[in-house]
Length: 107
Image 1: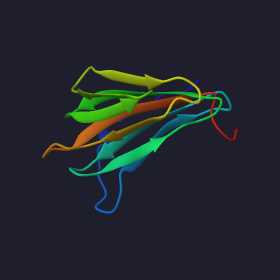
Image 2 (image 1 turned 30 degrees about the vertical axis):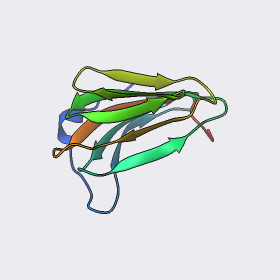
Image 3 (image 1 turned 60 degrees about the vertical axis):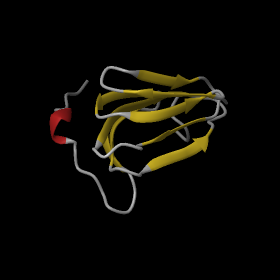
């Protein structure tokens, strides 16, 4: 069992999206991702894991399973195992996401 204050995990990086680890167990991981304008994660898939993106701040364009949508605070996008997914911050403001995956790849 553990506790973490995610309100402090909001820093971006100029070169790529910033991943702030909240926790990781053999079963899953949970991160806070911060994307500056123009940053993203290209579409990819995980053979045996489901992944989700939950928007905490900002707006982003999300792709999952051949569909694409813009989501804002409170929006969630998930991709089942082997389903292509990705995210892009096309806005002028920071995008902050809660990102989790289970089972955790490589654990």
